[in-house]
Image (cartoon, rainbow, N blue to C red):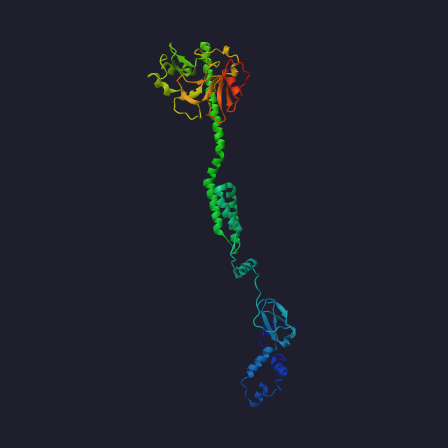
Length: 419
């Protein structure tokens, strides 16, 4: 097969070949026989008509074969070159000139090979070309829920505060991804802020309120134990006095005329490591004498009832029962041998409901036929009592009266046991 130079395939005139385009034009379009054709006009008049060149150019263009290279370059050649080989001037590819029936119609310069398309860039361009979504005015339900929960968090605290924050965050996420279809950002933010205020300011107060009962219980238990320790020390001091004098101290110290001077609490001072204070008392004078009254404010801490509302700094709730068959029945102290009901079943010292000055000879009077004196009030649901054996018990407020009367007497013969 004959190869052609690329200039021939590219459309250069090849008039030297037999059957050139000029001859073909005349034969194909019958220019030789057409009256007034360009050839006849030139022959007859010796002058080429004005439109003869344009007509010839148009006919020559129509007789060209148009075909396209794989690289996209549009090529053309004369009809008589069909079937021959040629080379593309752009890419150098060798190809066959198509027959007239296989050629393509000229439609302007053909497109060149396109570079591979970027799918991501095309997606971005398509998204930019999308028409804006019309706002429909929808309100986010999560934003509304966040606002409502945030308001109620001032009452319900964490039970609605935390859900309010969660709903608010989810609502903001949904609104941001809705492309204008949802609104309610303000409600979501307000719900989150209200929940945050509750968490920062009100939540600690709420937790404190929830913990307050537990704190009070712990404090009450600590005060009750401290009170029991004080009564324990007083009971030990009583036994130390008993070891020295052979009996417990009298409830009231009297002069030779029977006039009350001071309380048993003063007599226990040497047995509680308070000897210097004891030596400053004038033991032949009453508790409120000019000398002894000065010592009232120096009450030892062991007489203080922890947690109790003290009326002043020199009063105490720790008192003894005075009356028939009690541990302090008469002016002389009682020996343990007279505690026939058992030291472990007899009250020695108890918390009274009314405080008295610690040096004043005033205690709880007991009459078997009269109502019992008021007891306790410093602790919840009961009071402490030290028994004659040195043990300290917490007696419930609803202790049976018969049991309590049996514990007050030392030799009444009642068969009772402390709660």
